[in-house]
Length: 399
Image (cartoon, rainbow, N blue to C red; front, side, top):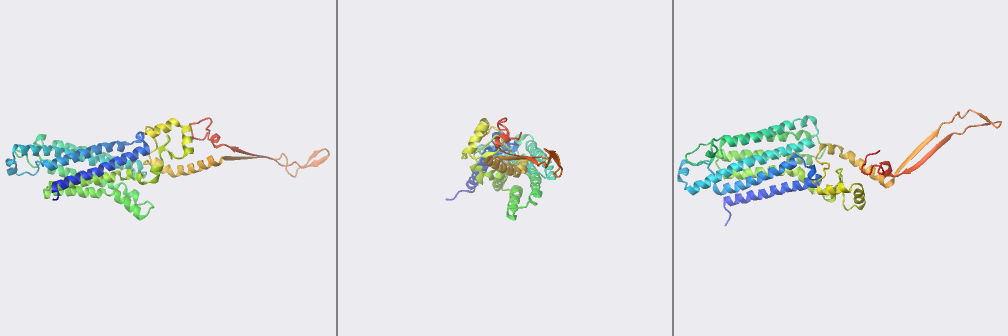
């Protein structure tokens, strides 16, 4: 015997929650390994709030699925409820409102997370100047929706009132809630989607990779589509159960898209082969005995603290790091060559003759030509001495 529609919806809801939670924890693991706790940015902290909202919303969806709510009830239904049925509906409505508040907390936090990432990696000035206003707009719109939830129906307890009928604006699936959320959701999504497009299009990469980047960033289009469907199912078809499952699908897509950039390092070889981070943000392979010995000599305390994640290191998702990555790589190669071969300093000092080659000098009664004189010095200098290691053991800057 197959599962009922309610059971199928609950199975899909918790399955999607499992994938979303996995994505969040993979992001946290990746970020912690890359930059440590001290290297966290605002979005690394906000993701915990988003996950808490996601958990609360999923629990609320599970409870409401079993009890129902007071939306779209006819007068006959209201009059026919037993006290137990009425109590169950009221409980479901209360949890429905919990789901509303946590849904906004999740979706709007994910929007801010994406904008915080843009703010760190976008270097195009005319594009970057739009990020902060968009962040302000997203923050204000999210708070505004919460205010609408709390004030559209007064007094608040009428939202779960059975008798008398409180009206269509005092129910959890109120048109005031649905339309407000839909409009602000679409407006903020459009703003967020438009930011990376001027940056991605001019990139000199293959069409397939460019399409993949656009697809990832523009997956918000699916989120917008799901938001429209949710309102359509509720207001037009009055199928709240179908709307609820589309809401869960919207959430999982928003989570995956928001965390994809941070999870990507997990599929690279460098992420797993470079064990720890040094105090200056450079990675090293713990299997390299020479590198491990050198690091322990120079900065033993910094290396230990970096393994624990308490020392701030360079964030790979930072434009200042991305812009200098190529230069740093070239400098590291040259520095490594100097370590292996040593530095050969050749100083050639040529002393100019006091007289020209054609000028004569009388000595001992005869003419002698003054020979050209030169001093040639060739000295091997150790790289540690050249970089001031003896005088400044903890500094790598040339002295």
